[in-house]
Image (tube, rainbow, N blue to C red; front, top):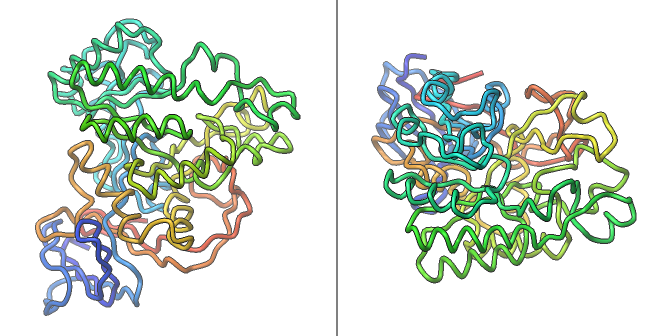
Length: 409
């Protein structure tokens, strides 16, 4: 295909208009040229959607690995890369190299490391990294304990008009912990930290963001107290937002039973009360976007005792499928789900994509929201299949991923 394409006989999911309508998409020169019902030109390639849904390509904020096959399988056309690489993305040249890694099939948008080596002590050159292609600045997997350092990061980010992506766990409470404090951690004899570690980090960072005027996004929040703090910050008009993964919406700490290391995540799975609070926060708009937290880890990191295994999950290719459960359960509508997965991250980071309007880049997916299949860690396209949903029957699957009018995979 040469970038001129007509997708016909589909169901168009428009996250901006909040609608699902019958029709198709015409693509010219890598951009959307027509939406809905149109006369199909004779000089374009044609895909018959056969009633499948057509939506903007997903934009996944906060992946830890460049995993092109997994992204294509999951309908992700833009991946926002965390700075936790080897070496960390704390220099403009490293940011530039990461940004070029997926083109032209998929665009990688790196986040700049907030501190040198992600050590939390000395600020990195955010301005140079922004010029090198960084779409935001992130603290990485850890919270920055030094309030003075975090305040300076927020002030510089405000001057550079960059959003700060923060990891919200007070390290003084979570050091050495592998689970959330509660009945299941106690029964299993696991080192655990209280869930308030998240809210304590959120409270401090919100106060610093308010003082500096910077935009602040919490990559993943998972507890009721943290959601209450963000909800209050939004009510007061502060530029604070947050995301969550489907795992923390669908699983509680019960899932770590049997010492299942695939269920060792960061942040750790929470209590059922916190999971229900997360679903409420999704429904009322406190949660701004969904992300996969894609972190494929091989057997050397996961086939270990629970306390020794690395936290993380392979989530890119199951992101849409798992999230569709929220629609079937009546938590949110389909167009709202696509907004959470595409339009919202595009808006937060000022990225192209997430739109079905004429002139927008033709980053699209075709998916069947009802197609049944079973998640299998051994059959995943990802570098590794460390998913806590191994063996789970699901409904909804990406059929085709299209980047700039060109079908991938």
